[in-house]
Amino acid sequence: MKDQRTFTLGLALLMDMLWGDPPNRWHPVAWIGQGIAWAERHAPTRSSFWAFLYGLGLACSGGLTLGSIGRVLEKALERIPLLGLLPQAWLLKTTFASRSLALAAGKVQWALEHRDLDEGRRLVSWHLVSRDTTSLGAEHVAAATIESVAENTGDGFVAPVFYYALFGLPGAWAYRFLNTADAMLGYHDEKREWLGKATARLDDVANFVPARLTALLFLAAARLTGEDAQRGWAIWRRDAGKTASPNAGHPMSAMAGVLGVELEKKGVYRLGEGLPLPEPADIARSVRLMWWAAGLAAVLATAAAFAKSRRKV
Image (cartoon, rainbow, N blue to C red; front, side, top):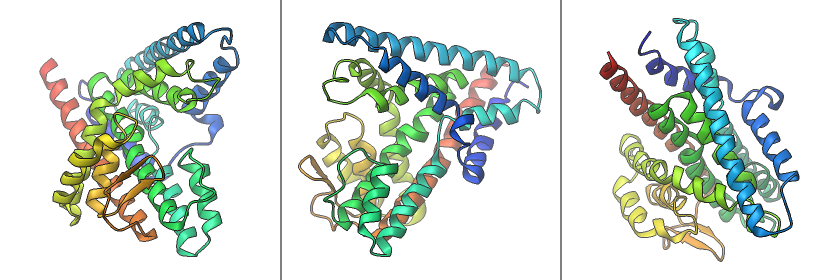
């Protein structure tokens, strides 16, 4: 079936909404993470030059390996009409985790609504952000949660779907490897400063279009849900460049504007400066926008895949 790919995205999104992620022992991304951790333990430490080359080699070889595996599996499953849809959708679903993100955000919201700030700090640190949360107030815990929802909508869903629409399963899996490597190695500490530099730069390139597309999807979702798309556009254009990352500021500032809240990482940036600080209920609003944006992204990607398959006929 030449246009089998056009049905895969919707099924993958449905799987994610209904069942979320499998246990780590059955999750390909967990296996990827274990492989990257093994490679990190064996990284050279004698000079920044060799650490950089090692990291570059890891990023390139890992992406090519995962892309090749994805290619073989996709071609094999496309030979099985209808029955190949289910495993192919599951393989695609493992590259994103919208339901897990929504559940993690919901747990933080529940803790804040029940005035358990310590638990809220623990949950947001455990599930969503890497920053120190021990001194954050309730508003900044809510802000960190909303920021994570916004950013992860981009690199956790829109980006793999974008690369799936362009290159199929090989594109989605190669992207997922690169993004996972950046999440594990892209830190400015003594051990990983040069080891993770190549993966960080390559991840920046890979997320350039998806990050900006995610911001646009949030504005479209705002139109459909009664949120303020016009304010979202204004804050996006004003504040997108305030983050150190060339990409993260785009979905986060658009989310800040749409929700009408200020998202502050103390001492680093303030997105939507001058707007009220977020409340726990704003977390649920951000999750609703995430689902709408994910649905719109799936529709666009399915349409693109269908058009691509028609051109080949």
